[in-house]
Amino acid sequence: MEASNAQNISKKAPASAKAARNSAHAERIRAIAYSMDTLVPGVYAWFGPFTIRLGGCTPDDRPYPYPGTLHSQYGLALVLPGYRIFTTYQGTYDPGQASN
Image (cartoon, rainbow, N blue to C red):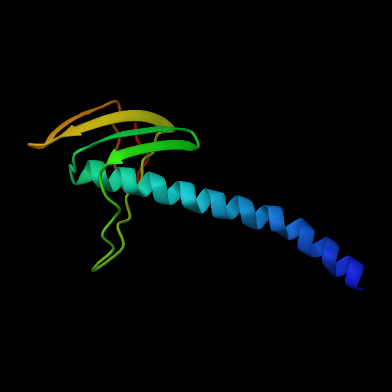
């Protein structure tokens, strides 16, 4: 009985580790989307599972969680003080809409 239970646990562990990685990646993408959406100065890059955020900030989830996301697998953005943004991303931050 214990051997089969150990096998079941070992089969579930990789799935939960993958879910944790996906959740962490989604949070990093959400932070980039929030920083770009609110024009917080910084340099942002995302290439598949890799993200770089120099500057920016994490989403302020009060009074409600920031729902935005990026609908592109890769992109670069530079946000300068004075609300100037230069980016390869041309989509929306709305989670309910896909970018064109």
